[in-house]
Image 1 (cartoon, helix red, strand yellow):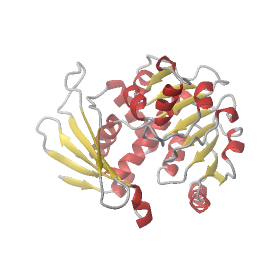
Image 2: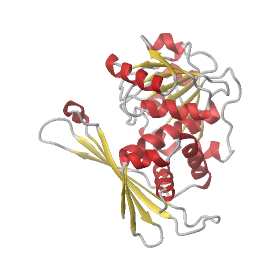
Image 3: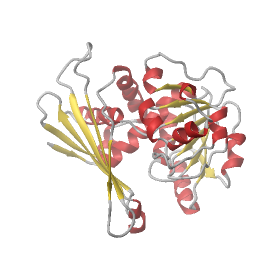
Length: 321
């Protein structure tokens, strides 16, 4: 069994390439049980969450060939880690031979998550953002933010990026990183003012209150909501949901775990029938994405084990496994 570091993951993946890998994965499908959530209580401090995300090749599919793979991502979410200078999210990805169950690789789970999350958003944007989208507002400046910008730029001609973060120093660091990548990046003073300028609005935070106000969205905007992975969290308000055509990564996951969707369903701002499609529908051509340059589109993701499996397989096979 091989251990694959974050640096090795970076060395073999490209954003455009992984977007196409994910597109093919959603077309073909995989067996993806519901993720397991376990609360880890602690005698002091905030409880942690243990997540287990399994998936395996759909061996029953008529078009399936080869031995296939089984994979599981093991993730911990420990909110108190930030005070210790550590990431709140830790993880590892275990890839197994689909025929024998033999362990093939332990892959850095945090890096796999960053790559597949950003590229899933870019995959959605390839169906939902305007073809000429060249400006972007990045809300949040955590580890995922630069991956999101780079991934969107792999499918759309994104050149200008405004960055907003609750902690300005973190936003400044992201601006410097993006400038070094060749983007025209700058700090954003307020979110509302920037909503009228951005073609793509990407939000990756752990906010429990709406940051994206629908009343400020302009026709033609694509909204990409990546944070708020629990029902109690939320990055957009009801008006944003009402004004947009809403899409999700997976129907089952989004309607149970995504705060932006769960709370909108509870308030009546959204009905189950209002959800236009998920990535399976879009990638298989069963549903349409953007239908006009003037409409507002909104994509909400909570992450799917099929994305981890596809990314893990891509890393392993590119390394010559």
